[in-house]
Image (tube, rainbow, N blue to C red; front, side, top):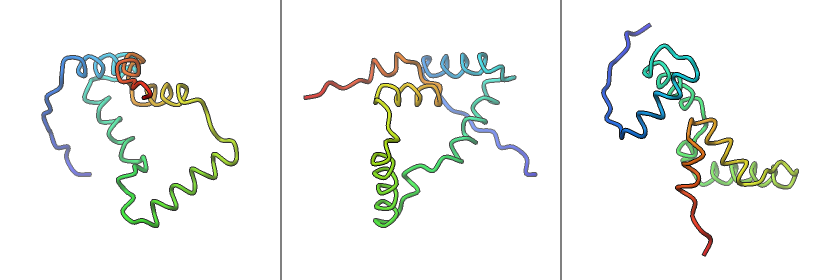
Amino acid sequence: MAPNTQITITLTPELAEIIHSKARSYEYESDAAYLEDMLADLHDVPFSSQITTRQQLEDALAVGLADIDAGRVMPIEEAFSQICDEFGLSKEFLKNNKRSAS
């Protein structure tokens, strides 16, 4: 196994507090251990940035449309709440970033 590489990042106080709070609540030994797990999890998530061709995009959209047709849907508020929980974002994040419909 290769040795770890150290990097340094600068965060806003708000983001630093979120990371520190989540690390404590999940009983990590350090903020760095929490971030390492989060980044490892992100590595395993199939992000849309991995879609590099039109066919891949059409295939991904077809899967989503099939879910809708099959009734595998949820209210948007519930979906965003789950996303906040999964990524350690506060519910305040949703309130502060909500856009009004025009």
